[in-house]
Image 1 (spheres, rainbow, N blue to C red):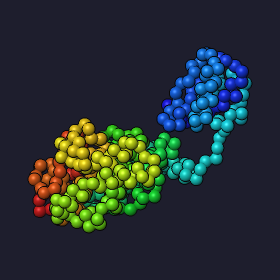
Image 2 (cartoon, helix red, strand yellow; image 1 turned 90 degrees about the vertical axis):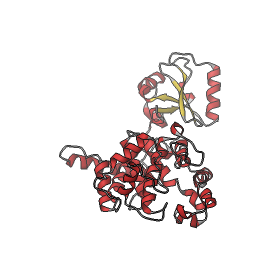
Image 3 (cartoon, rainbow, N blue to C red; image 1 turned 45 degrees about the horizontal axis):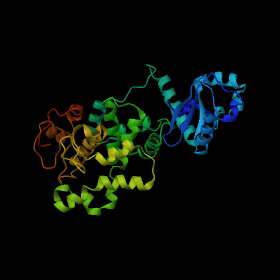
Amino acid sequence: MKAQDFFNISIEMLKEDKLFPFHLYVYNPQSKLHTVFLHANSPLTDDHYEFINFIVEKGGSLSVDRRQKRTFLNSVDLVEDDIPSLQKREMTEIELKRMEKLSAIAIEKSNAESGELPKYDLKSGINQCIDNDSFLPMILSAKKEIEIFELNISHTVSLAGFLAENLLNEDNRVNRIVAISYYFAKNMNMNDQETLADIVCAAYFSHLGYTQLDHSLSHRPISELSEKDKERLKKHPGYSHHLLLKSGVEISERCKNIIFQHHERYDGSGYPRQKHSEFIDTLALILGVVSHILEYSAGDITGSKLPIRSVIQRMKNKTFSAGLEFEFGDKIYENIINMINIENISEAA
């Protein structure tokens, strides 16, 4: 159950009664969880009172399931106006903007012939983007979906919405990685907002660590780097992870792990920890394959640009090419290979 499924009460609202026809919950601000404190029709003892006061002193609270609101109010002889947590509050500016966007989408749906907006078709969409060398349609489509994520699920989900609203406005490398990774995750049936927010935020923050390296390391093809410089470059996931920890930005542990693992490979050949197979988060592998394809295509690895379809063809044929990686796991590998049309592509491309 989510935080919004409960409303807070004070111990004084229970008056002198000892038995109640509703469950009492306590909220722990550290775990951010509501747990049953006292089941319905169980006696409220002096020890219980003492524990509740302790919880409140530590920043916790006593609460009731909203589904039992009417039972609670009738039992303690109160009305909604007596319960501050049941009062409607004014919406924040961010909430109002989200509601405006949702209203606009509702109008679009009502104007659509089917009454529903068409879902973004990843396969046709990404191929059109490659044909036109412009990923702006995919980026703007992702923006439209992400910026209306719910605001009260977690800091990471809210942050993903904020980043999408403010940054997913133009066609650039980072936004391509964000949009493709987002839709790729959805294509693999990862549809809950917390999961999608994790990969969105990870895609934006994964290369923060480059700021701690010599500028030339991230602006020269990897093939031109010395072995010593390559080892230095491999430290960037750890630096990214460390910077986020030091910054105090509240993002999920999974998001941090994706950032730390996005250069790990399924066969253990990646870095920084040489993790393999199921020990690597699937979202890290998705972010890894999307980033790698775009980086290889742009010439960041070999110094020579190569059309995206040619990169995919080499991956599909397992053609040995300096710096080209294949080890992202069969499921991810097959999804990315099948997503992009490579018929009639020649190496001359």
